[in-house]
Image 1: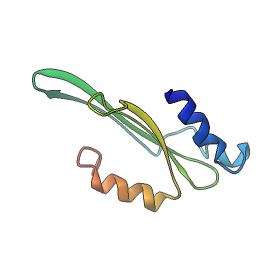
Image 2 (image 1 turned 120 degrees about the vertical axis):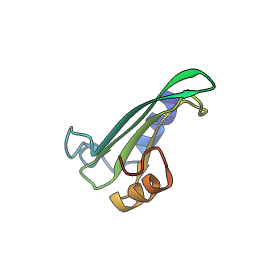
Image 3 (image 1 turned 180 degrees about the vertical axis):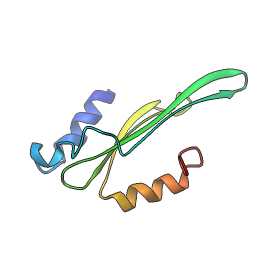
Image 4 (image 1 turned 180 degrees about the horizontal axis):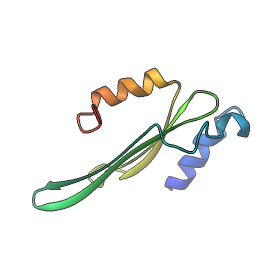
Length: 92
């Protein structure tokens, strides 16, 4: 089910060339271990910039539903705005 959503998302991109990674190096990658109610959890936030300027974001947080997802942001400013709203990502 999650794979189908990711495929649909990529189909919305203009073409394969524009969807290619600008660089294989992430513009931000955070892996954080947290403890909630005595349970050890791992959260992941990784973003890459595509050649067309869009930002591809992958997040994993086991307390979310679904626990992992991909999102595309139109530009770096939109992505940075999101990061300022996420306490665990902001400033890292």
